[in-house]
Image (cartoon, rainbow, N blue to C red; front, top):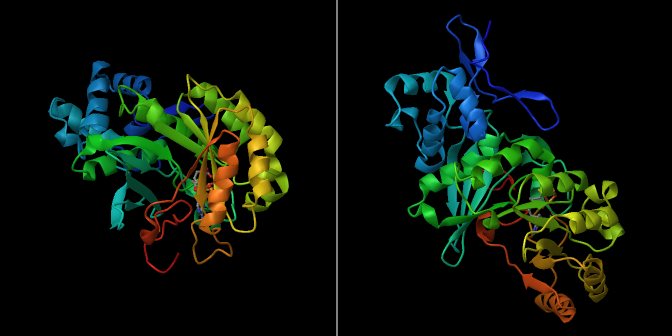
Length: 378
Ligand code: SAH
Ligand code: SF4
């Protein structure tokens, strides 16, 4: 039999049991067992696991220090752990789950990382230089099931959910590659996938990203973006405090359902109600992302409808001219139309910022992540 100490089973929010992670090892008897996926565990779970190995709980903090702050690549580098413990960890636990396959650097300094997952799938993570700091855009799924019309990730469908450690490891591996890793201060869960459709793993990952005994990012500098999965939005606000962004893209149900099929299930009325109920600490706002698409959602009356829809909400609006790609039959509006749209919102006392996505020349901009590294495929 495989003992409990060898496979870490945990209960998720809904009471279902699951195992970390897809990786397997061989027990002495020749049976296979799951290795413990330490980067996806909370401090309490790590302590429980450590205790099951017959070791003192304080080792858990040391271990997490090496994983999330030391960013070590091998257990052997954990120099304040005994040799015996390092060997035990090698045998029973998992360290790295992502491998950098390729990096591409844009003219504007944006870097796109293509990571291979253990099963051969690939995901993309984008490091964006800002004034004085960096923002990392991480993926939550390989592909996406939501099928938004303007998004290349949506075109490939869902391949699978990422595990919590695959999400955290994007941050770890990128930090490892940086000369000044402490300049990476902001995390946005806006890469491939719909994070709230992979709720448990994303929540685990975010907790390790913001926890003091984890990567210690400020929760004020972490943002999750959703297409509007209403029930999960309601839970998310209770489960963790980070910033919320909502991909809105239209202010009427007909247009939004055309662009984003999720709107048929959770139409604007329910989405806006969930936004109103979302707990916002002092002075924080929800960011509404609005991709501007010529002839579809860029008229003056669309802007007026948007202002009306968001009235009474603590909202700021990011206007994003559509990033084109060859598999799209839509284009961004001309600049004067974009400016007019912005003006209509500003006249109605909204903060509305035009955001030009970075990294377009390397297909690293919003909606252009495809996880394919052979150029020409996207
Ligand atoms: N699934 C989540 C997060 C990932 S998508 C969401 O939808 O919010 C990240 C962002 O990219 C979203 O705001 C989405 O609206 C935007 N996006 C997708 N395709 C785009 C495109 N072609 N041009 C500009 N932005 C795009
Ligand atoms: Fe998925 Fe977001 Fe793309 Fe829609 S915009 S298909 S939800 S990744």
